[in-house]
Image (cartoon, one colour):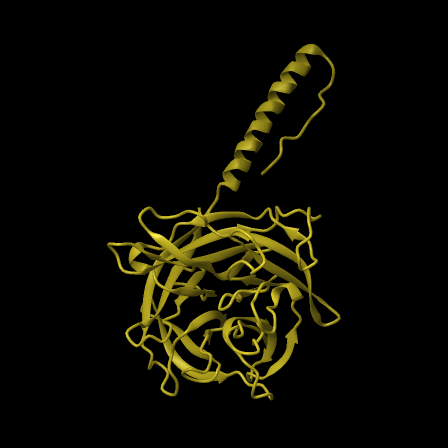
Length: 366
């Protein structure tokens, strides 16, 4: 918000009084302009809905899409298949705008490879890091003995794992026995993002040792060609409950950069009532990390500064008939009106009767 400047007019009762009135009016105008600018909110208009069957790609089953990004006119989307249907993989789509509609065609499937065949992957998120590198999140498997750890790692464009990104010990579960700390089972780093030279990784739900419904974001910076944690944020999950509904499995599915320290976040939960069937409840928020203090007021168990002053406001954009198991957000190509598009992609959980859904929005700011 613009601040009212303080002026010091020349002496003289009449002149001073007149100058004060002028400056107060000018200051009031500046203040009103600042309020108008700060009141600008993101708005999205749905322009298209696409549904893809599981046999869309001829050589593999399409499903489990959990993270995505655009590379030119191609959509790259990672599947969270743990090997139940096929190997860990990324689906690559060609995108074309025809007759004011986006058309998707299968391009190829990129399998994620590691020399160690016992290297376990449960792909949940990916982001383009450089011209030839991506960063991928894997939730691991907490039910195996010993547990398979959650991971962040870099892969090249051929799908080969290059190196892992070290995680704080407080984010890792015990190797075996009763889990008392770390990322929850099947609720690890559901989203990763790159913004202003920083890497962000957001947990889907609170850590085992945390109380309440706040979860954590890690911020990494590059030091000597290595990703190093330099900050940690506390993200408050929405606590509002729908009357007559029981909410469970509430979590954060995706984050997407809007600008320095600003993101979109996608929250998802399951709801059930006596009258209705189980259904998903999905909400999108605008998140601002900039209010977080430079000096953390306390230290988190990871040993890094724990900021808890995130600003968050909901963007009302998802209609009731569009509610589904949406897990991925990606900025897409310009739409027919010359506006940036936002793509929201669902995970069909490899259910034979469910398709993969894509909602496409145009962004406008008023």
